[in-house]
Structures are given as structure tokens and as C-alpha cells.
Length: 466
Ligand code: SAH
Image: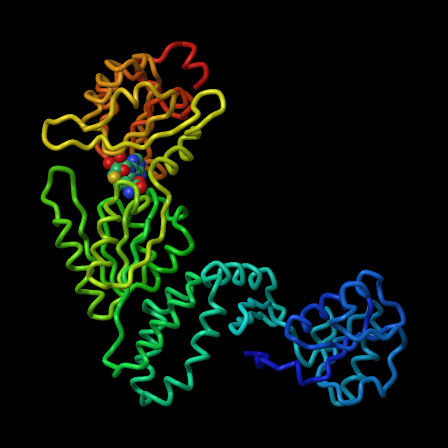
């Protein structure tokens, strides 16, 4: 550490900026943001600087005199001329102030870091001038990982600090705050629901401390590419004590979780033995009751053919605090990966998501007439096994046999495969394409636009479009 970081309350300090151009303005903004009213002195002050700072700073259009600097704690020198800068740095230092000279680290008593400002929560990053670009990138990384309401969370915790201190001994206090930031109260604050957070907080500190309840986050992991996780999903993964995950959650995504987080596989392989839904829910409840931060990680979006709704209801019925974080569903993830818009001014005014899942040899229980009649894009999840049945029902109800279809397997993953053809050939396409992984059927004119190999049945016209 080459320089000592300290957070200074500028509201009680005399802060001076010597200069009147853009550099002076940017330093002035910095200190005004910290609640100070700086004194900005220089014979020429830009009109834009005057306009922006009138009301928040004291502006003096004159050459500074020693008396101006008397009692100053911090002085920023932001003047163009190098000799002037050195002169004023010397004068300011002689009057007892700490000095910062813009772009002249060798003349600085202190430097200003790169700042992440979330109200009460402030993060400062500095490389002491060695690698400003690295600092900028780090700042962006930290910004992304820090919840938008992190400052509100710090403020909230601050309001209860003395109440918690009065009630609990030091060891319990540490446990309390660990559980607080990990648990439902912090999740409520971060969601912007402070009223509910206060209610739970009061109830928690007013009963004897015996550990805090855990929380369940039902989180969408998207179609498999880790870059398609939401920032919130990533944060929750890195905070989870235990993760219950599905077959569709990719290894790369799991690898982003905290290293010591528990991982429980609860996936169901088609036709293979599944962990019963009720058992999954029981496990989630039991872990939350142990005070754990539980992430239930599901492929795509938890509320689209993901049984997320049932899990939400089960948690609510058990009195467990539960939150849902959406994910990119297979349909939108695959469409983007295949370069095919699901709605299109020329080809489709609506899009419908259906499940092709059916028990045993049965047919999917769908309103075929409605689906066939619609001039829309039909996206079928879990439809590979029943593709032939879906195709013949749609054709029987009036959809054209030559309607383009695209089958997207492992969409938005490294091993993505896209094959295209006509609706009447869908069974042959599945077979010829040797589809074994998770796949979507996209049925409708837009399917001709998808990137990918045309195997069967599309007209020359449709191939040209493709
Ligand atoms: N909740 C998930 C869907 C779960 S149902 C979501 O919102 O995406 C499982 C079905 O989703 C699979 O049978 C397959 O049809 C589809 N699916 C999920 N991920 C996929 C992917 N990467 N590529 C293609 N289809 C996918």
C-alpha cells in the first residue's frame, strides 16, 4: 500500500479548488457529491462551471491570496500552467492543507480514487496512478456485482445497529448480522420493499435470538451460456449456502457459485427416475429452516414450464421467505442464438409457447384448432418425442404442411445444433438430426429465417429467405 485510504467528512472541512476550467469543475463535482460546499477561486471561471456550481459552491473570480487558503483542509490545484500549479501547490501546503494537483501525482499529498457511490456505502479503488484502465475495469466489475440498493441496505442496517448492540452479546451480534445480510430481510430491502423489511426486522429483534430463518431464491439460469445469466442470478449464486439444481443447468454456470456452497442435484432425466417434486420442495423447506440461504436454480426461466410456480406456493405454504429471479427462457435464448426473431412484421404477429410433453404414448393435450389457426410462431418445449403427433395434429387442423420448422438443440450453448425443414417432415428431421439433447421446435414462417442446416422439405423460395 503506497497511500493510505481514508474517508473524510468534507462537510466540516474547508475545501478549496484553485482553477476555473473543466478539470476544476470535475473536482468540484466530486466534493459537492460528498456534501461539501467548496470554494472555487481563479481569475477566469468558465461560464458552464459558473452555471453548474452556482448554489452548490462559492465562486471567486480572482487570483487567490494566502488569506483565502487559511484553515483549508484540502486544496485541489486544477490549473493549466505547470509553473502555476507548482506555485499554488507550495502555497497551499505551506498553509497546512493537504494538496492534490490534477495530473501531477508527484505533487500530490493525496489522490482521488475511482469511486463507487451507493450512498452510505462507498467503495474506492486506486492503483496509485499505475494502471488507470485496470482500475476502470475493476470499478465496472464491482458496479455490476453490487446490488443497486446496496446503499439502502447499509442505511437500513445502520438504523438498527444500536438496537441490536443493546440486545445481543458480541458473538450473537456477529451471527445476527451474518444471518441478516444472508437472509430474507436483506432480500426485501434489495427488492425495494423496505416496509416489509422493517416489519420482519422488528419482529426478529423483539424475540429471543435463536438464529434467523433462511431464505429461498428460485432463480432462472437461462439456456446454458453463463453470459446469459442475469447479474442478480450471479450475485445470488455467489451468496448461496446451498444450490439445488436441475439437469438443464450447465456446469459452467454451477462453476460460478461460491466454492464452498453445497450443491444438490435434483434433476429429472426424461424417462429416468426423477427426484419427486414433493421431495425437492421438502428439501428446500428443511434447508431454509436450518437458516440456509438456498438457491433453487432452474434452467431458463423458473416460471416457464419450470414448476417454479409450484415451488413458490410450497414455500409460501410453509412460511418460508421466498423470492423469484427470472431467467432468459429457452425460446428467447434459442431465437437469439439462431438469428431468428420470434415475432416479425412480415411473418408473425404473435408467439405462443406450448409444452409438447405428454404422459406415456398419449398426445399433448393442446387446443389444436386454436394453435393451427393462429398465424403465429409456435414454440414447443419438450416436444421432440411428440414432434410427429404435434405436426399431424396441426396439419389436420389446417396449418400448411410446408410451414417452416426449426429444431434447435442445445441452443445458446457451444454444442448448439439447428436443423430446418417443413412441418410435415418434422419426425424425419428429428431422426436425421439425431436430436438427443434439450431441444425446441419452432413452427412458423420465421423458422425459415433461422441460421442452420436445411435438411428436408423447404421450398426453394423458403430456402432463399433462409
Ligand atoms: N424453464 C425452462 C424450460 C424447462 S422445460 C425455460 O424457461 O427455458 C425443458 C425444455 O426446455 C427442454 O425439453 C427443451 O425443450 C427446452 N430447453 C431448455 N433449454 C434449452 C436449450 N438450451 N436449447 C433448446 N431447448 C432448451
